[in-house]
Length: 349
Picture 1 (spheres, rainbow, N blue to C red):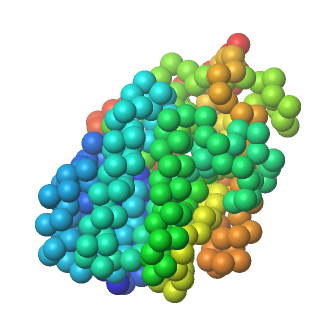
Picture 2 (cartoon, rainbow, N blue to C red):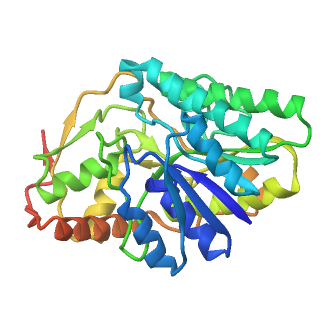
Picture 3 (cartoon, one colour):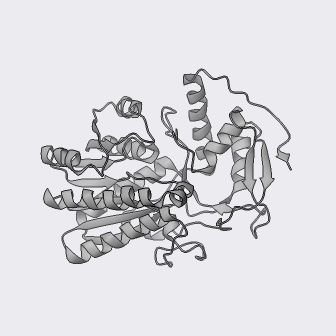
């Protein structure tokens, strides 16, 4: 199949492209490189040994995007492009609704115009009500607490209405939990050009000396050790879920949502301890106050994806931490930075 991947040079998108190429599909990447690098395209080709076509195009640029649709007959679209910072969305909701929602509408208009009827959408666990009972099922109440999450929810609602009106259209909504780790080759991983949105980049910055200390937001939750519990999934497992979703989409119409997570909740302190143990390094951290809006526990029920997509994650938390640190060390070497790895007492209060 020929697949258009929007945001294909990003952290998750690049891993999806690798899996697509390894499965023998043709890939065309559209990315505006606002939070990614063109060098990622070279790395994708180096890992897979296959050519990738790409264009530096923003999905809100309908004219430029149409040139691509006119030139290639795509079988499906995997849509990952969009802004993704919760805090930034609170400060600039207008930009988030324009880029995420309007950009998606423009993309789908072109899909319809050029007879592309299958799309895999990168959604998020942030669409779930903060009080959802864990493990969270796809049928849980949907109510996001941030403009970012509400753009994801608005897009999901748009796709449901679209497929209700057009019975030949196929949409798979993939609700990500917390992807971490890096490609097992050590050649690719998360390299945010903007402020990181995830825990692990902050942790690795603290270990390598780029950041003085990692702040843990709260240790008084009703959890195993008082810190928040989240569902961490290896980014390679997440990428493989897109391939399964693609095959499902080609055989089914309508709109279906699937959780992609590990199905297990790990606390922030468990993640820190695991990272320290498997990489034989201490992590300097400080226990701070809770952050407003943070919820105590969130992890997925992944039985629906197992049953209908034939997908299940295989990587352990230990592997996530090992791959992430291997990638970080490579980054430091590329940047000619000597990792200032220190060994303080594990806990600073």
